[in-house]
Image 1 (tube, one colour):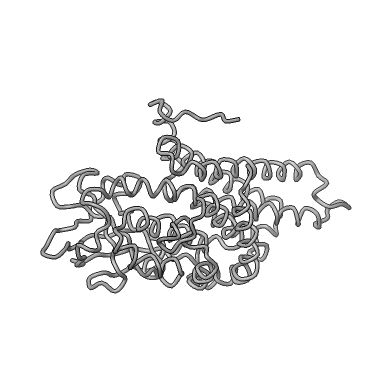
Image 2 (tube, rainbow, N blue to C red):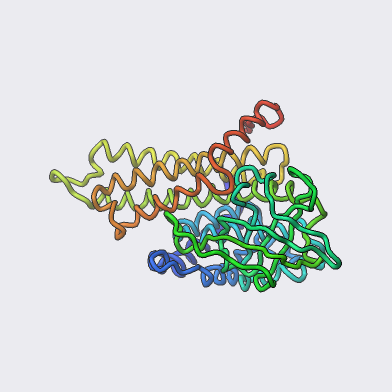
Length: 386
């Protein structure tokens, strides 16, 4: 796939920034579980936040593909920063850009685009994961706004982010009806956070519960109309899935590069292990799936705004790229042999970090349901273009 001149320039520039300012601290931040706020600020200062927001609203006005290339580059250097970046950009900031009023955009977008504030996305609940329509958090209408009560789990940046896009339902509603979106500031009375979860990977990207105890939210902090939250969340998650595909590609690309370096230098039986067919086959499969995944993810980014094709393209990209990343990060550990099991050689971390890409923002099973249901409806068949 060909890039525009601007897209290529952005890809080249962000790789240089990541190598200089993000990758060097990545391993230590993972060990110490340091939230990558400084990295988001650096990305904001260099224009990589709010990339798809029109210049009139303070953004870069670039393509969704350009943003996808940035996610991939950031994930190559630091997967934890990549997921915080993706949630901030594709789910929180984009929600305000797409659904906010002029006043909301003017107030909230500038600090988010600058990286001075970080946004979070609070949808998942203990009994409402894949089935978001089952959420139980309530938004009780009161004079001047709403009072929110309930709880969210597995929220990226819980307790660290400055503002939370919270989805809650109006009293007496069921299913997707009545679900509404609200912007809740970190310091709001009644808002609290659970302890940071002890996770398999992405240790620097703090994850935890968001607890709402009669949190007062003024009407001016409602995003979109009452009852529009469910469709809003699904639309945002389509873009988020492209971001997760790109995150997976960044990790796969890093696993391939580390494996190539090791295969060229590690010697056994008198020669570099890269001379052995068993190792070459693993490297060949990594490179082939990396290329195929890029074609899927970049295509999904190109058709992001196509409501007919975009949903399936995003699901296909996330499904393929996430499963390929896990499969090949495991292969990278095998290529490294005993050293691959040691933290010093980094590939074991890539495997731990990659696994969640098959789970969050829609599991692989949900992606297959999305693809299958659209195929059966016949409204989004795969395209063949010259």
